[in-house]
Image 1 (cartoon, rainbow, N blue to C red):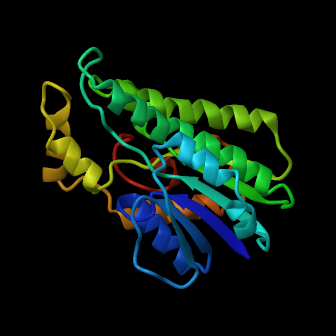
Image 2 (image 1 turned 90 degrees about the vertical axis):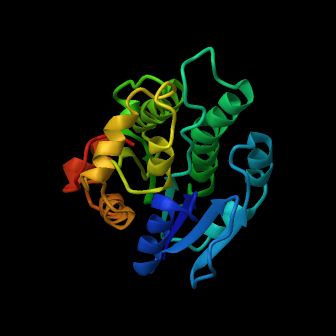
Length: 246
């Protein structure tokens, strides 16, 4: 039985990833602050992934190991993240900045560490970080987001070198997807994010991919025979469309 742990499974790309996994008969443990509609093979745990202490306490318990105990293949998709705080350094709220690092960086690293420990009995375990074009190209006003996603890229590359038995990992830039995050970008102040009009034009020109198509490409790759051979991946290399932006 294939089992997957998925963060941020209630909205946007996360919801599409949840539905894609369930449609393929993969059991899902969803971690988020909100609960999705109940479905067969979906377990959910309400948790604030931006609270590192609470997450560490939960991971110290038996839930993760219990979920994976009867799995034949285990997946971890680190999807949850936040764009905030947007704006130039020196004008950001420090509490929001600390939360962004906790959610975008600390949570994936804590989950990955515990996932590797809990899945050590399996010959096939796979981790997918949902990264961004912002990890690979800097954007003004997104210094925190760029730093967080770049951290996931370097983390994936380091784990590839560590070569834990049976472990494969990749960090995927999923393209520009028509989600609430994109609406948040378009609604932002141009002084906080000078490239805002570029995203407005993408929406107006119908150039945003759907969460469903992005999720299908991501899960196809995650389950593929060559997953993990290349660590830094762009959805366009997988047959997806759109610019390599978040």
